[in-house]
Length: 179
Length: 112
Image (cartoon, rainbow over all chains, first blue to last red; front, side, top):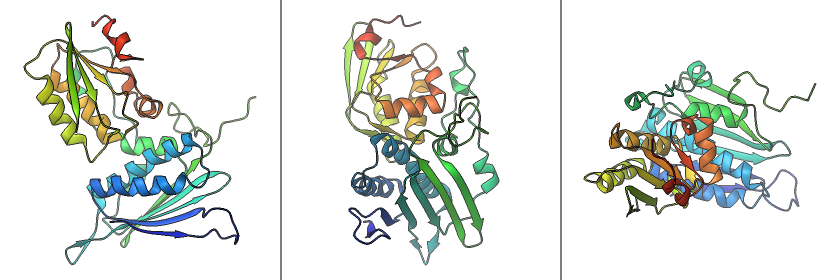
């Protein structure tokens, strides 16, 4: 079950609530259910379908990462992951807080794609994982991850337009103006 | 994970009858692929036309399915929806698989 709390906009009288706070239970099935609830919310806030698609990929990666690596338990009960989303003129602002093991922030934020040896028949060498953080980085801007003894707080924006290209990890989050 | 199989000439066409291949379904996808394709020969076309969401676990499962087929049988991908195509191109896995706009186009392709 998802405990879903939809709060009103900070501006009273706004047409639609542009803020969503939800607690996501740990587990792949629970993440899938939570994403369905999230979709119902974001489809009601006038987000374009391309942004919704990009954001769903990012949220799935983030929540499944926590499910696989960073979940926290208290007295035998898995603690839920807190997700806070807000739409603005820039895009979807997301904060994800979990109380699990601290994740190596530097390594996650600097993740590069696993190497692919093209043009060879060496299929056994193809990667089956290691894509998650690269997808997150590629589809977001303003990505920050703070880990301390009490858990992890990941913040990012899924922009209205497409963020920088994968080919250049140092590319600016917004497209550069033509010279 | 609901998959269906059709044999067309030399090809096996596997249709994914689900909207998602995600972390919750990745293992079941791999098992279903193995069960359907083992004992048969020839290249496989994976029809992804009904799939609108693949995450990194689903992507990994598709790569694993290709490895399971072995070096001599290729896994072709067909009818990818835009959001699924995006995950393949962002991870460069679009360079690894033969990709076709439709199953019909895949059937006409040269499996080499």
